[in-house]
Image (tube, rainbow, N blue to C red; front, side, top):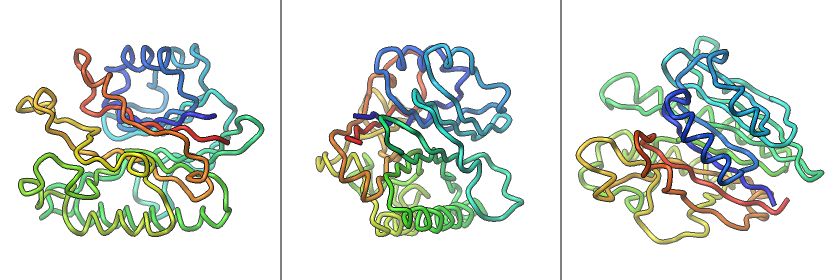
Length: 261
């Protein structure tokens, strides 16, 4: 059994105590982090390596940034999403993990937010998701277990947002964003959480403003998408709300799945 988790940490240096406490308590095998918000050499590597994790980090000053933490040996396969060379945003890292004598490919994904919709940020979001789909399609040809995990900045359906009408024009809920997410799913991917939890209104993100956490008003925008070979091995999946309730938390909380490799 291998447990893979994804967490938009919203500044790894600010939340390092929350992260190390959670790693000690939950002992996930692989963790996909987003929004680390630091350069690669500014990542708090020692604190995490002391807990037995290998690291793959793609940093960016003050913004974005992704990482993979693995208790097993891993080889970094990509530190950016294939596409325009001028796109320097740190939003993707991919590695092959060797666990229990098996191979698992994982990718930590931080998709663009896309707001405001009237700006060039929304076309960039849609183009980025199209690039992700093209890359995922290529990886699926290897017919191996793959977990594409991260903050997709998409609520797939109205069941994934506390106020569908109020959010319908936001980039996270726009028809175009949902269609781009469905095109990923239609490659043959499985939403690990939704495969085991059909109940609506389970969230991974609660805004800091307006008491959204206290009122239970959230969004489900963090997803673990599984290749068919990984989906066949899915044993469990859930959202861990514990870290969101701590003092000075990330506005996201971890989502995880367990695979029987």
